[in-house]
Amino acid sequence: MPLVVIKKSKESPKMTPRGKGLVGMSFAMIVIGSMIGESLIVQLGVFAVIVLFFAYYVAKQNTKNLRILRRIPRSVFSGNDFNFELEITNKKRWLSSRNIMIYDHYMPFSEKGFACDLIKPRQSLAEDFRTRVVERGTIKGKGYRIVSDFPLGLFHVVKRRRGIEVMQVYPRPMLTAAIKSTVAGGGEGNSLMSFMNNNNDGEICGSREFQKGDKVNQIIWPAYARTGQLYVRDYDYSTPQKYSLVFHSYSPSGKLIWPEVFEHAISLVTGLILMCRDQNIPFEICGPFTGWKMLKIKNPRFVSEVLKCLAEARHYPESDLEVVSKVLMTLSGNHPVFVISEASVDTWADKLPQLPRVINCVDNDVLKSKKPKLKDFRSVA
Image 1 (cartoon, rainbow, N blue to C red):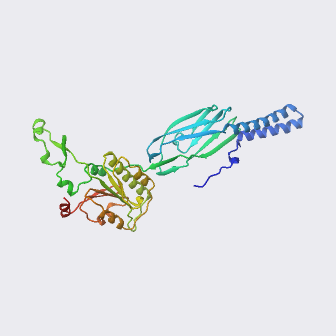
Image 2: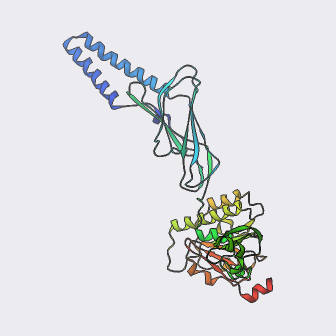
């Protein structure tokens, strides 16, 4: 990063319209007083000039030795509010600083600035804000301004600085209802495997009201005889061994992919990863942001490495699905797979290889479970 050098002359006090008016008035008083021989008017004009020089000196000293400290988290999610603390310290030994205004890029738009009427020598003032960052990636060197027009509003001082704080902004996590229900069902969606499990391969954990799609053999008939309402047994399904997540940016010929669509797809991947973390499901992930190398997360509580990759992800459209098919063919095991893209599922789902496992094809609106062939399923079972 190139070193930015700020010339001190740009930070010198600049005369305000009020100050320019006082200059004109003092000059006119000196000239008119000299012409009419009125010494009092000349003295008043000279006094105004002295006031200007004094105000310049005070304005210059007023903003000296002010230290700005910003306390921000090391990592946040895009669009989510976080706490931001701004502290200003007067490092001068004797002179107080007055009418100081701080404008910071991290501040929420509604706040605009942080005003300090008086900061005594060796004193600090701090203020907490709730703010957010919309863009994702690594943010560093955000600037701030120290502004003051003390004293008397005759001179205006602006000091621009860049902070050294570094913050990692992860993509905003988002999930569709279809993804949530698929993950809750063990990643098998409405595929052949979930029907063959007959919806009762877990441990009985209670009962619930009958819902559309429940099996008749799950109905608790004694409860129906007592209450007249249908109840079924509820099962605690076993957690899947792991998930495999594959992201691609397949762009069919003649199709336009807008940047907003890509960002939404990255948010879906982020939401899926956080759902794996919350349900303690190990996973592995690959895509252009990992160099198509499979990144394996054995402990889902530690997902910062993956989130950093997603924060820095860039859009690289691909004209074919060769690398995606290769990744899918080399996956071991028979656990469910999520293939995510910003492109419509209809343009690429049928082009994926047929595998003896459930492949959940996901775009920004649709989740389509690609069923394994029955003969392949039997060979794996």
